[in-house]
Image (cartoon, rainbow, N blue to C red):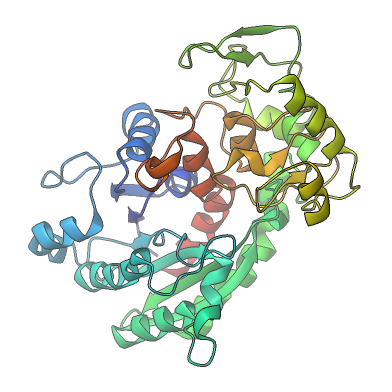
Length: 403
């Protein structure tokens, strides 16, 4: 068994997976993230606060594109061979997402090739790859010869020397209050002792077997509900000015009402939550949201007929229900209506549904719009794109057993 567990987080986002691996006892060598906004959040929490990364001296501590790193530092990456236990992370999901356009020619899909190049240069002992459920599906616009990118990646990793196994996993089965199904792929380099596809496959059985013991130690249930996650963050008469969002109000904590909330608030104290800034809804919008909250008894998208009646043009609009798990948290805050208040969720509430602890602070703009959506990663997007840290921690503990 390895004496230390080192990893590189590529396509790191704001650091959800890195936080989970940190909690599982891994040591980061560095992280690669293209977005300056997301990297600011990762840097603030995991580089500055937690001193998690033993950053290599030849790579700048800043937002970087993976293709720039490959082009400018390929020789340095090769010298890491034998020193890196794992490469973690997967390319941005928008090109494969069921919720998106699923364009087979989306430029972001080409990052799969960059991922393979990076793995080939570093040759880690194991790989941990995550992507959206749509990654396992053929593209609709080319159904006859459509590509399942999960099969492409599996084949390419096999060809460069890895035994790999991939499977869909619902994070909602692992203590996260959200039904979030993702494609997880685990690979082990073929020249490592006892490496096999069966050993890579064993990750999933071990993950399931360890779940209840892990969650029991955390003091939480496997099927955490929306109310379990959010009921101490309700809006009330106790409001304060949002310190980093001019003209907006933030809510204060009420008494913690579940073990999940106690876990989230550990090491935070009584100060008001970061990024818990409420939207400024008009009276008309509030009345509309009140009606939406009553139209269904389940956490599910409202009907197209009702959307037309209310002049709503969003693809998804889900009224949350207290005793259920949320649907997948996305980058669009208007997709969900709070379970008992006529408003959308705050960034902090979305972060709770993603299992981020409250000490984890999000940086930069709250939202963006128009053409900037393709360039910027505001706080809501950072949260929606992340791997839930609580799942990352469980995965990190099992991944140690593979090497």
